[in-house]
Length: 413
Image 1 (cartoon, rainbow, N blue to C red):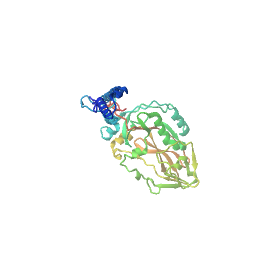
Image 2 (image 1 turned 180 degrees about the horizontal axis):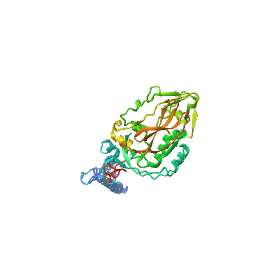
Image 3 (image 1 turned 120 degrees about the horizontal axis):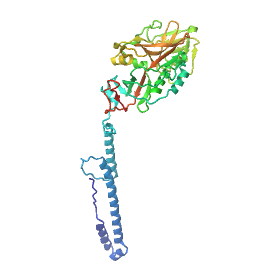
Image 4 (image 1 turned 90 degrees about the vertical axis):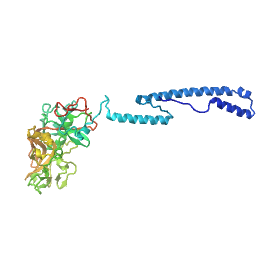
């Protein structure tokens, strides 16, 4: 226990010293008595004792607070010297408590961050994680689709929130990403130049609207072509197309024929296209920050484009890790055809194909929604939501399985 010890010259000794000095100065004791020196000294002593008692009470209160944090096994006596010492003691105790809280959950069990367990290999790519989105309405996204998709086929019967299973996709920027086990049963219809103009944002917005969780997820969108390309051993940049100047992916072609130079308006913003010899500088293949209530325009001089389409029937060896063949292609067993929320351009002999990416029967591919010659198309496919979890998401170690199946999924919190 902490103790308070008093040191110093006693009040009585001090008074005696003063009396002796006054006598030497020629002042009588009676005068001192008449002036009440002893009386005042006694009052001072009483005040001092009262102050000491109050101080002792405060010190005992401080001691009680500190003893709440000290182990019962630590019997060392300590002395509170002053407020500075008290503050220093409190700082140390707070730091000690913070360190403990990094490792202990509120129920006293060890905390394990999901991202740490994926990074150290305890949880593997492809393992199942139990993720439950917040309850969602389709009203807002159906209104968006009605206005911007170019199709009236998107309804409450074709688009719903489903009970999906989720698997670990990867770790990106310190956050674990999950992908739906399979493509959705719900479908999104896109048509013509309006569908191409808004495909990326509409597909992403649908995923966000239906599969967000405000507590657990920092971002929700659809699978992108870059997500697949990041895990390929296949060199898609060697994809051949004799219609472009280099004969392969990345080559260019110019169209000047009046009847073959109409374009969806977003093309003017894409970095892979030129309208009347002016190159777009805003958007990459998988980007679209806002919806476009625009249609199509005919170039006055020419269209020029970069070949960004590639397609292939995928096999396991095309991937750096076979688990991605499983996740994206289902090991050759057909998923429903699903959208990838990325645009691409294909150079035909006479016109540009404005395409949106898909995975179809084991193929990474794309289908056109509009040709620069004016041909239009309606397409309806499923989609693949991707969830980016917050970096502080933890594993419920008491209730989790081993992640090997949906039934044995890791529980997160």
